Image 1 (cartoon, helix red, strand yellow):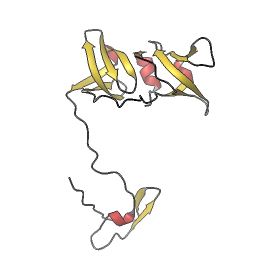
Image 2 (tube, helix red, strand yellow):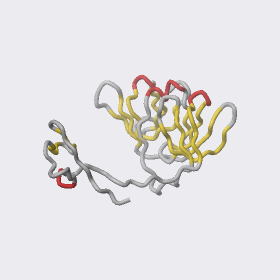
Image 3 (spheres, helix red, strand yellow):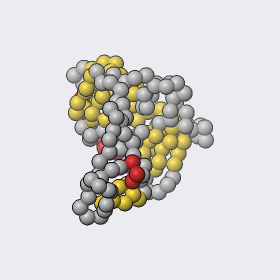
Image 4 (cartoon, helix red, strand yellow):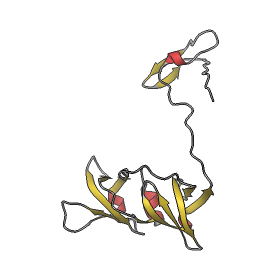
Length: 174
């Protein structure tokens, strides 16, 4: 999961429930990475990382963090019943714990327990259902058909590329 710096600026407060091992933090300005357990992300965007390499938690300014990837739980996550859209456009599948005039408290399968200030919240959709993937690809040019042939089409780097006017179709069983 990628958490953008704009979430930090919006003041997302994160209190992770339980211990998540092997969270990865990619730092800005290169390929430097830190691994440990993200314990909190405070309102100023400071990330608190517990690491076996340091006796005290490491505090990282939001401006130094490019990406936070939370480790996967050993147990499969419960199905989220709501979808939160943040003011910066990020979408988070969640289970709602509480909602009042100041904040929304949710549980995210990827990020744990989150307290989201109302000003950082754009929308909350309740009653979401699992999405079903109906197509993944393209995998080759042969899976597509055109009117007559697939003239003007090539397949390169998992992409269909048209060279001039071209039409192509694919039958998908729903």
